[in-house]
Every structure is written in structure tokens, then in C-alpha cells.
Length: 217
View 1 (cartoon, rainbow, N blue to C red):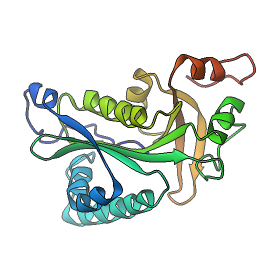
View 2: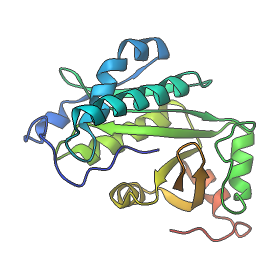
View 3: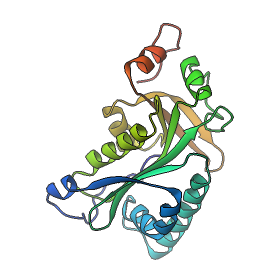
View 4: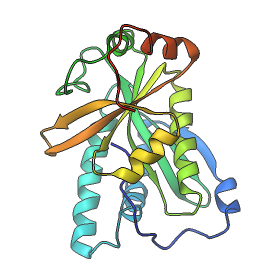
């Protein structure tokens, strides 16, 4: 799942675009993530669509931390954070294994090339991208997901976006992500668009060969 929707701007970190130019990106391991849990929860709440009430803020923090705990337990979990004087963004996820439930409940037939890449452990799922509101926030989100995928030498990135989240879908598509269909997660009773990002010419050729079904772009 991608970062929360934001259609109305919140109070930004700073209006100067140079604020984001000075951001440092670094990968952190799961033990350091444990130390950052509360700061990451603050970041999640700050990136929400509207200014939350105290009750909503508390519930959102708890739900986010529960999801983060589940992701941390996944083999190969990794996170990249963006920081200035504090954490202003993050992206995290885990490798998709052949015995993983990531593709479960995919609507239709999964392209054969993606099945092959999954079996060879070349797919990395980005489960969240969070950025504190800023005029350059979308560019930072792109940098975070690119760094996370590059660090893991993935041949294919994948993520799930709520099909009603049009701003996020537009952003991912503008970065080269391709829409391959829908997937339903019963735990959240939500239907997601499934996006993939081929990395490298060989992967692009493998996925766009004549044998695969047409994808929704």
C-alpha cells in the first residue's frame, strides 16, 4: 500500500524547495526501525489526508504500528528513511517469495513473467511510502522508492494502491509503474490496483513479450 492520500495541503515542513534538496537518504535495519517506531507513527499521522481528531490520530497511529510490526517480521524487511533534523519520509517493504501470499486474491491470471521473477526471488514489494507534506514531497517519494528497490537489486518492484486513491495512482504511473489489475485484501475489505515497476531492459523485455496478456496502463 502506498502513502496515504492527501488532497488538501497540511502545514509543510518548509516552503523552500531547498529543504528537500538537503534531505539525506539512508537504509535502516529492523532494530533501528524499532527505535524509530514513534517517530514513524508521527510521520504517518502527519501525512494523512486531513487534520485528524485526537481519537482518529490515536487509532491511526495504533493501526499503522500494527501493520509496521507485521512487515518488520517479514524475511528481508528493509526501510529507507529521509531525514533532515528528523525523519521527513520513509519507504519500506520486503521481498516477495514464491510461497508468499502477496499475489493471493489477484483478479485474473498473473502474467507468466511475474510468476517467474517471483519464483527466482527477484520481486520486492513496497508496502508504504510516507512523506511529510512539502511542495517537493512527490519527488522525495519517488527518490525513496527508487533507493529502496536499488538497494535490493530487485528486477521488479510491486505495490498496492487503493483504487480510489487517484493522486497516488497518477504519481506512480508518472514514475513508470504499470497497472496490471486488481487484488482484494479481505483483512481491510479494500480493492487495490496492483502496480509493478520493471527494472532493467531484460526485465522489461521479459514482461512485455508477445505471450503476456494486455495490461491496463
